[in-house]
Length: 383
Image (cartoon, rainbow, N blue to C red; front, side, top):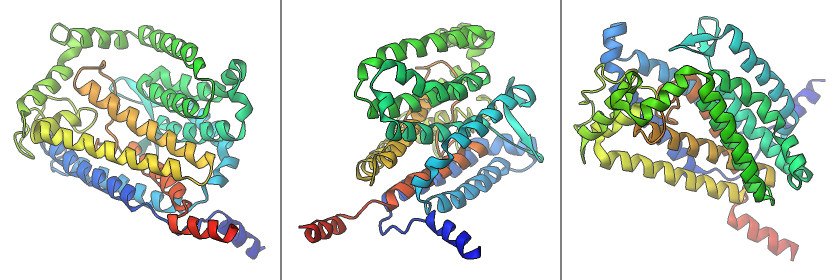
């Protein structure tokens, strides 16, 4: 019995000879940068509220460390085994996102957190990972559902089951989850003409959720005319911070807007503090790091040993890219204000933990890539 258990455990462990160190470098670099910017953007408020300058940094470091441990373990898993857990994960996540509507802990007017033992977490962050796994599975193992519009609708039903409850209190995360699903489907499907009706349905759903809640329509008004709207304060302060940073910035730690002008500057609006302290040069540099990282992820997707692994990485690329774009567009008032964190950099325990687990999944795919030399030797043996 013991040998059987050990055998099952070993069957889940991958023994790959390849490891993608460039991806690991980008992950570590952005996480360390996040520590610096969380401390810089929160030290004043942290000291005034909690009596020490490192309250938020300590919290971020703790969850990032737990996330790194999770990333290490997940990176050694044979990701193919996760197929068998797909619908179990969907079921558990559905229960969580429904429960949070009734007993969720409200912060800033939105009940998005579940409290457990004195701590809280956002079930919607788990949904991103679950949808990546489901769409990769569905588009790989159920390819017959990619060829007709009726079957395509059926394919998206489990996604809708998760996204709709999330959208009630957290529309921005619901949009990201939907973007992940559509992105993976778009790469996998030969029927790209279905994108038009899917886009129309998505836009209609977003409009319904926006105008179904008064505070969301107020955000549209603030986006169009922040100077005249009571809800435009945060956006204006963010733009002031970006404008005052100039080309090279005020210098690390020298932001003035973080001292109470930008509400919770360490969260969604941290990019405005980056622009103020590091200037346009620093902001562009960070954007380039994200681009290089996603480009590296693309190589992992192309080199994945199977279609399932490739689609998992596609989902991760869409997730990170969409979240970066939405966050930066909100900060610069290109998009209406919404609660989307900047991956690896913004403060947020649940966000950084599950993002690290997601990176572990990416590295698990990369571990099964055959190095070029091994592939050449394999071809020689076969010929």
